[in-house]
Image (cartoon, rainbow, N blue to C red; front, side, top):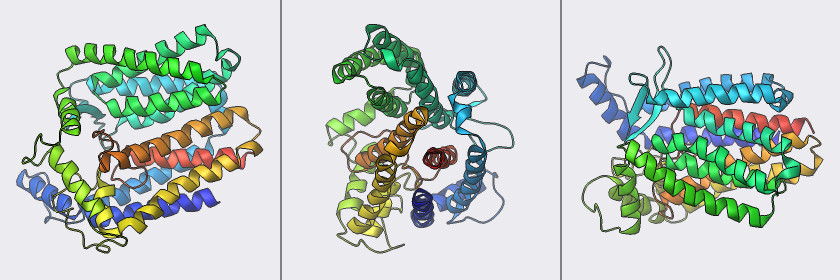
Length: 378
């Protein structure tokens, strides 16, 4: 039950954050929708908040469905292969005109009639863990061979090339790290991990160059890295540089306890996308250092609770999936936070359980339920 309690606390934390930091973004968006005759009621400060409540309801439904599926279902190669094919088809659908949606230079969403926009990459992350877990269990006795080394690189190159075409470097980075962690847990030696990392980076540069020639949506990625290297770029325009500068002011400027809940100012368009990628920075102004430590403690407690009980789990396949899911949650959380404090360039990755989102929130809930089921089955 502790892992369920932490899940609930993180969800409440996210609700409080969205309620506070999305006020200006909600008002601006609803005014724009009214101007376009896409909305007929008055402007609202709580558009994103009410949408997030709806998204939580959908995520609970997805979590309930996941809970009803036995863990053994994900241990059958046939089932995992079918899931992988469906998720790959959804990911490819983002390139179909009229179905795929471009946002901030990235074609990562699809529109399905009568349903909210879906971001297939979020489902793909979980599908990748399930597929790789089954694949590694079949090849566990060969993880230190040349054949495995080559097949692992080829498999990931084929999968990641699609994300480079979108382009979605954040997902490639997250899945690459998760894949290496799962390989290490499967028994791969450190020297093989470093070889895979080296050739993966080299191959990624080649594939990225090819994807850049095929896709014309790489300019905004170049801007992110350019500003990350030189903060003198884009000092005036309220774009990538402005966002990072204001995020640092919000995180570092208000001491131990912050300005207190609801009293932050950076959310009023000083930090664009305050409800999404930069929710950590926007909310930091209100909760301060202590609030941030509580949030980090919740993420770390999930890892501590699962890893300290790993030896009691008899299902080796379940362990493999659990390690992959835990890696997904923690790596994405810390990458998001590092972006907010400018340790990494902007990746457009959300903060698990906290940021505004539909698909991402559904997958977060499904991941926690799977961890709970793996622990419960011990």
